[in-house]
Length: 159
Image 1: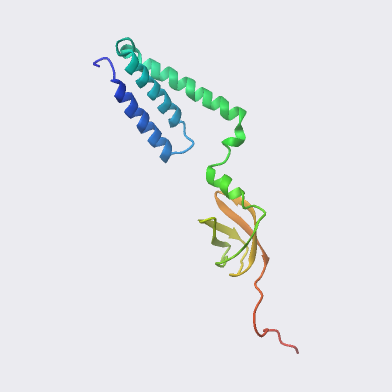
Image 2 (image 1 turned 30 degrees about the vertical axis):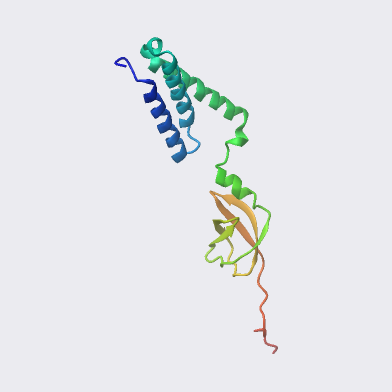
């Protein structure tokens, strides 16, 4: 153990790296975590033989896993091109919704499927129908399709 870490040290490092991945998504910490986990597993199985080679083994496995990840992204760019919230937001493009809160100064919000979304677009009153036309930085872009119909007497005067 003087020459390097015990197997459980590597597993703690792996857990720490997975935790980083949770807080910094789409980074490559998960691949480093897999490498640390493998080094811990190999250290557990062969403690005497691996002790002096832990760090070179971790470096090699990390390099291999990050290169494999980069090659996978290059072959499948669409699966990594948008954060998950962008993919979720894109499902609303082209759909029409009833506006429950006004769009004032080009900004507002709308609740869709239990999630509150920022909304940008032209001014629209409460009760208007809006159509989502785009997504930018997890903000839905909308146009006003129809204004609410006024009930009761009209404000229009005949001259």
